Image (cartoon, rainbow, N blue to C red; front, side, top):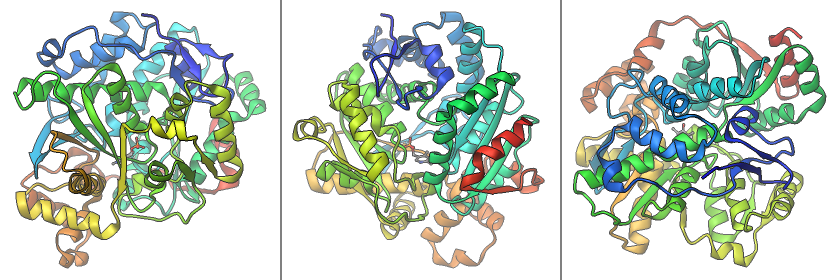
Length: 495
Ligand SMILES: *Cc1c(COP(=O)(O)O)cnc(C)c1O
């Protein structure tokens, strides 16, 4: 089956997988979506005997039709190697009646590594396949984790440069330290005075600037995106849901074909959309449980059918979910319209103009696969403390939002199906919030003292990503206004 990619906003654009990866975003402002969802060509039994890399190949080959087997296998081999601190790549831990799928064993200890360790290789391969001579400039807005994972993935990758914008006061101290200590001649990190949505809007505007694109091309550059709108990120994220399922099967925790629920702490809607695609491919997923923090725009959307970003933006202890415009939701909306780009475009235009749109009753009907809820700050902290006290297992703030929402779901529905909770960050990445949730006394300690204390409490090793930044010098200190982002990019490129 040969999969091509359409834009969510017009019928005229149809591109290959490698072209979609190179472009990131479609020129009409839409997102690329596969023209059909492929089905598995291996049984779950067969997949259950495979390593992570082998499962990755079996899933990704179905979507990246124009990659040769050799090209894709090379990309996978370069991505899922000893950069991860466990051979399993995505291990599971059972605690409090659920399976925590730990997606944080990569170089920057957040789940973004699952996709961003392979994206640079997919991108370079795509450039070669399409005879691109320009230098590729990765432009990224980050709520904290994407930035570092993208920087780590692209640092010193030949033929690429990477520019990351982050909200100056909207990321955790460790997240910021991780980014501003990034090495690599081709890396550039900039704080902006604004929040994540401002950063993301700024980046989207730069991408949409046709004059700039033409000028860049003259100078031998072209933009691409490492944000989760790139299908080169979405596709690798489908893999771990399949891997988790077949691992539960192998360990006889479920029967072949048995339905499991998936719980995902959600921001930009990329991770849960990957689970939705997995379900559409035939993976036996029951409910897709979408967990939000106090920025609960998605919870409200699932409840009412109205998406409304006009509300106060709340800074929470789960900053990677502090998002009011969940970009990847557009891909779901498009599917709900029956793949109608005109209708989808109307919704997105309304979102752009007034910040609100309401889907039709018929579309709302087909949202049955999803359940949405949220956890406030006190509930999130309480969940970390309770799971630690009950089991000794320490989870990060984002994962705690998911664990809390899962408990709410179970109370409401009494659904006893096996549940997989996407554990999206290491507790070491959000040490202060995690430790003060466990005991308020920890307020008094310094950041790195807390790291040592977490190590003692949890009996887990301090990850390399944290050990490394203790001593690392600050290499990036640039801050700009929202309105200066374009100029900042041009300055960095020297054009
Ligand atoms: C990015 C991120 C999320 C949100 O994932 P989306 O794909 O944007 O919904 C959740 N938790 C952590 C730790 C993250 O880094």
